[in-house]
Image (cartoon, rainbow, N blue to C red; front, side, top):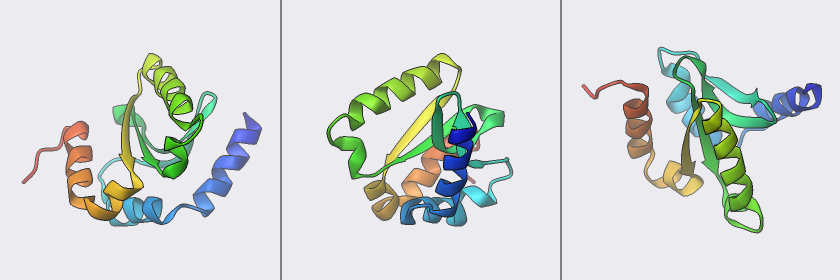
Length: 114
């Protein structure tokens, strides 16, 4: 567990361009507590909203290569078994469809568009 906490701190300091964009331009301004690089059991999720039990994962190319899809399935199954809803978006979606991603997150959080 301590090792994962140390890794999560490093990941928070070295967010990807897409993680920074989602964090600074959307998630940070939500009226909910959003944790970055949160340790949940044996995993570290990109973003976690505990009050809604929602994890947000941003998938770069490594998630689509080799064992990436299998690892993601295992992670999602573990999280879902533990009551966490997983929202996954690709880096391409963050870069090209940012507003759509933000609206989808708001919908899952129970906020209606105004």
